[in-house]
Amino acid sequence: MSSFLLSAEVFVYAALAFYVLGLLFRDELWLRGLLLIGTIFYIVYYYTATDAPLWDAIVTSTILGLVNAVMIVVVIWERTTFAMGGDTAVLYSFFKNLSPGQFRRIMKRGQLVVVDEAQTLCVEGAALDKFYFVYEGQSVISKRGVSSDVPVGHFIGEVAFLRGVPATATVTVQPGSRYVVWAHDDLRKLMKKSPNLSNALIALLNLDLASKVASSQPVGQ
Image (tube, rainbow, N blue to C red):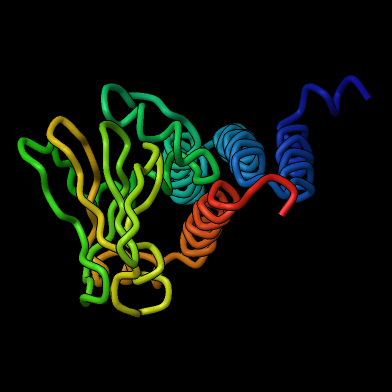
């Protein structure tokens, strides 16, 4: 037994153990992390198994390990809010059902705007090719001649985006407000590339719609 523990073969079985353990995890980070440890054990084995190191196996395993390590960094980046600050951090507080990585991807397609003077974002009955998220300031919604304030932290034009119909109301934002704007086509292309992001964003928009409906109805109705 002691001779086995001191032999090169122990590294093969250690690598196998980490590979098997990794494959038992559904979480991608655990899977990749354990496979990386297994790869390191394989590299040690290839270096010590024979009198001359098995360089071809070492090189190929090292390349695979480096690719895996890079992907581990990508996964961690997708899951953390590292380097989020300012308006981005404020915005993410409204997008909590998206992962940090998904949020970063949709923000790359959006544009942050600070309103200097009153600005109409959409007009009731008019075609709309953009939609908005107002996260600071005051905005007024007018529908069928009735006007009311819109609380911050809501999407504007999401019905037109989801259903491909004209704007259902007129919305004007006041000076000092801040919002993000996305072009329909740009965001739809991104959603088509990532079904998970698409599902998460649609769920977020539906929650926003439900919140608006609930707040517009008397309690108990």
